[in-house]
Amino acid sequence: MPYSVFLKKHEEKRIVDGHAWVYANEVDHIDGSGKNGDLASVYDASGRFIGRGFINHLSKILVRIFLRNDMETVDRDFFVRRIREAKEIREKLGFSDCYRAVFAEADNLPALIVDKYHDLLSVQFLSLGMDLRKAEIVDALIEVFRPRGIYERSDAEVRKKEGLPLMKGPLYGNFDPRVQIEENGLFLIADLENGQKTGYFLDQKENRFAIRRYCQGAEVLDCFCNVGGFALNAAAAGAKNVIALDISEKALSDVRENARLNDLEDVIQTECGDVFELLRKYRTEGRKYDTVILDPPAFAKTANDVKNAYRGYKDINILGMKLVRHGGFLVTASCSHYMSASLFEKMLKESAHESSRRIRVFESRTQAPDHPALLAADETTYLKFYILQVL
Image 1 (cartoon, rainbow, N blue to C red):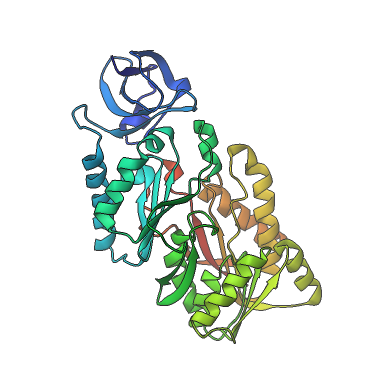
Image 2 (cartoon, rainbow, N blue to C red):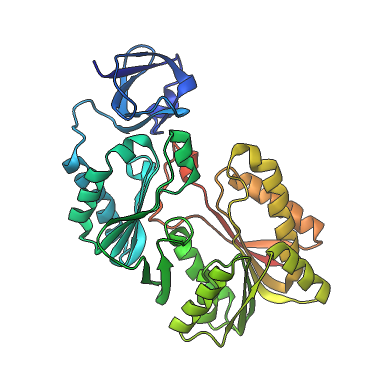
């Protein structure tokens, strides 16, 4: 008999409201038998059916629910339907060349990430259940997208919590994993093999465009620039000059290549080094900029990291504020869901106070709509993005 998972009393509300995760410590008992990765039905303490999902006894997330009825069959055609639904809503929103095509729980396919880069797909299988159905999912992706190739980037550390090895490599097609994409009218090279995440940070697409109005005729400093998404948009908007900082020389090489693709190499300069150290050096030298952009990596990757992450965000934002000319702008972001919006705003207030600057909020944004969020799952709303005037 297949697995039946019964929750403890009062543990069902979050899941009934739409959250996909059933934690092992919320479970009263399990009936039936099977193997890890099988479908399991989940019930509340009274025996009321809640949903079905893949089970994994090795993970703290025991079941990831993606079916809210007990009739639907999970096969190749099921994945075709779900993936096509996700693709169609994004096309209605105007996404075409590069976008997140499947966003895991938010698209009712927990632990599955699919990103489209021109005619290539980059895919992450982040749970045992999805990993076991890799062949069916790849077939479904081929039918829905007709891609030239599919590259697997299942090299995220979260797979270890599922008892899975890190995986990386082509799944379909014979292709160069470096592909030219178009974003906001600009051309960039996305590296599906060695780039960050699945190849590029797609979630900041609309935020990168939003900074343009704050960069016209400006001297711009783009910190933690990665491959130059913000720097390119600043330069395209008519910035006087842009300095792109990153600790990775490979990333800066990509910045220079992307600048050449868009005839912006005369506007964008690069500097390699630790951003914290470089900003302190610039402060000592008395440098000032009209717009400073801070888009650091996630300082808090677990709940235990929040305290140290808070100090890191505060340090970098104080440094950034001190480098902005009076009346200029600080663009600042956090991509860690553990750093809540309220906590991030608290940090910004403290940073302004300690840097003896006043700040006005011009824009408060989040991830692009191809990364939709579930109100019932705080984890899916993770990106904080503020454009502040510094006075």
